[in-house]
Length: 308
Image (cartoon, one colour):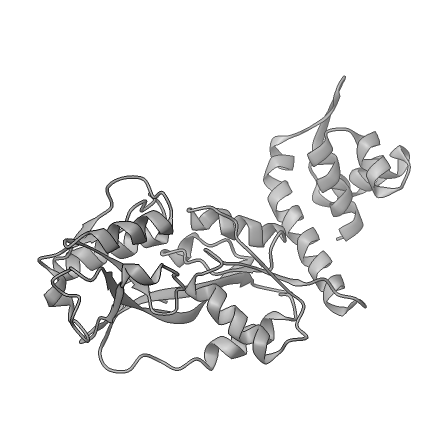
C-alpha cells in the first residue's frame, strides 16, 4: 500500500480540505485527489464525501484513520532512525524528580552524548500516554496500563523496574526513630497521599496496597504540590506519606524529615515502559539495556497483582 497516499489521506482528514492538504504536502490538489482515489480503489471503499466546505470522512474513513495514522507515524520513525541528524529520543516521565527521571539521568550520565528529550505529559490516564506513543508524539512513556489487553496492537509494554516505597514522616511522628518498618507497623497510622487521580495506575496501586495490608490510605483534599505536603509532614505528629526510594524531594533542613525503608516485604511500585511494537526509536535499545541492568530488590517483595 502506498504510504504517501496514506499520508495524504491523514492530512486531508485532519485539515478537512484537499487544497489545504495539497499546500502542506507541496503538491497540487489534483495530485491529492488522485492519491486518495487510488487508495479508495485499493481498499474498495469510499473514504471521503465531498461537501461545500471541503471533505468529511465516511464511516469507513473514520475506521481507517487511526490505522493509517499509526502506519504514517511508524514510517516517520523508521526514516528518522536511519537518517543523518536523527531527532532526539523523547521519553515521557511522571515528573522530573520522579524515579523514572532519576534512572534516565543515570543512563544519560553513563552516555553523555545521547540526544535525549525528557518530557512530562501531565496526564493521569495512562491511555492518553499510549495514544501519544501510538501517534508518534513521543517515543516511549513510563506508564502502566494495568490491563495489557487494552493496549492497541501497535504498542507494547515492558517492565522497567520496581520502585520500593519508603515512609516519609516528620520528627514528631511516632515512627520517626525507626531504622526500617514492616507493612504491619503502618496499619494504625494515617498515610496521606493527596490527589490520587481516578483511572490512574497509582489509584489502582494504592487501592490494592490498602486492601492487602489493611493500611489507612487517605487521599483527601487536592494536591497543592510537594512543598505543601512536606510542610504538613514537618508540622504533624500524625501524618505520614509514602514515596519512592529513588524519588527526589528537597526540604528545608529545619523540617528534619525522615525517610524510612519498608521491608519484609518491600512494597514495590512496578514501573513499565510503553513503546511502539515495531520500528521503535533506535535510542531505546540503550535505555532498555540500562533498565535490565538495574539491581533487583533484595528479600521478600510485594507487588500488585497487575505487575508485568
